[in-house]
Length: 201
Length: 201
Image (cartoon, rainbow over all chains, first blue to last red; front, side, top):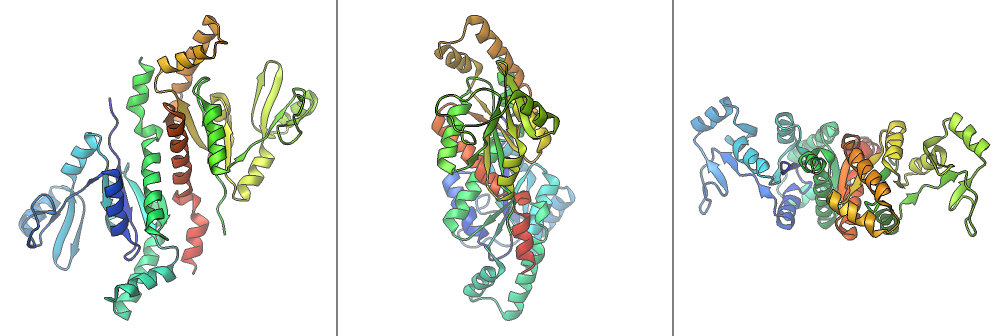
């Protein structure tokens, strides 16, 4: 008897360092990553089922209509989405699955799968967030303002998240995400099968 | 601005190793321990306010009547109880407080302080629990049966706990308790002041 795996979501504003923390947590824990479906064309070297599931826009729209996504978003006229089926298969096998999505995606996942563990990754303050976005060297003043405004609105939705981790150093943030995952494995609700097994000894 | 400290309770059946895990977690984290009130006479070397608060039975009964305890129990005609005031003072200062109590005490604490984080410490199975109780060499066959029956009833109340930790090796159990404490520090509800501070920047 085994309980289901955990679905863990790392979210937070653009510039908080979600991608780096996500990669490191995957490397250290061996958690499964979810493979997204996209309508954009494969780039050289990208492999179907590894990098993405590549679908036509028509196929994608059919998947939306059939309710096959945990979350879906349009970015520069291409669609990106997380298909439910492979995620649920992994969870049923007892595998933990890690996501890195924006706050919009996190809300969508939590709505469809309320057992999801949602972590808001944030810089220690907004000044640091601004500095990091500036450091990219790719943001205009206008886009910077837009991003900072969005970040504040996103943090304002803190109540939809279970945890907040401050990314002051990547190592510490990764440690804290892993602490959270380990603790969640110990939650009573994630051990009901084991407990019932012991009680029926 | 700072959020309150955590009240963390390690509970579980007799023989699961609560005392050892509690001591090690205190040593590694520097968490505050709560000092109990008791009606038993001080033993040589015991210091008022360090080992216990020593009170007469009359004083103790007055404290019960005034609702001054988080939990109280009678053991061999002496009373032992946890006074609320020093615990709440520590929590308000942002200090985390760790308890080691039986399941009865854990329920009482959770009832009076629902924010308490309750951890059920259990052996990997009941056979191991039996072996550990036998290993003490102090239990008669009758008392052994009584304790095992009690342990099963206690695990049956798993729904009142937040977490379960299996004490297969002490080091691992201590690590897992510390994972839980660290993760709880990152819960949104324990960071509301910090988040509101950021939002008002």
